[in-house]
Length: 223
Ligand SMILES: [Zn+2]
Image 1 (cartoon, rainbow, N blue to C red):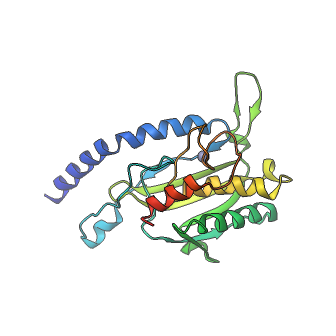
Image 2: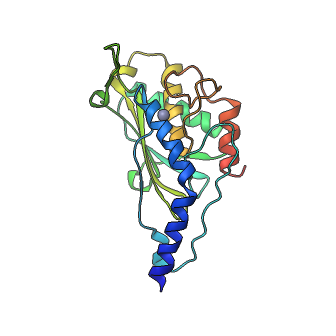
């Protein structure tokens, strides 16, 4: 009986999520240039262990910047800096300050990887480089992988990776903007449209966190 109820709930969920899935298609297209919001994997609901009723988190419908459709359950989010690269570390540190200044959430640095919800690190994203029709190869500056519970819309884990090869030697302001973009994904923001004033515009980093970005995360986290 319990299993049957769960199946019905899942069927209902897949209908409810169809608009989100559509948005995700757009995101992945944008990602083929510079960014990648990564793969989102649903997992089994851990809440089943406690026999608690599943209460999905509310995800607002109307936000200036599009949402992925899930968020953290808590507003205090522990983040672990796994990168040993001083330039990447500085970018992430500034980006954390930027998101904390929105008042929507509060990133807290932890020294314990196992206690972190978000991992901030660097990597070599050369393997994910794309060649466009003009023959120029563009490398991704960053990528973020998230996992969430499709029943509760609760994010379970996020890993943001900045490409040290392309970002080393760039300005701190630029590294910060790229880190803000990736941590934006780690909070549940999707890609903005090209014409929007947002750190979440995928192809072209032109700005840091804007009022629209801040407003969107505040709406997402009920602040
Ligand atoms: Zn992105």
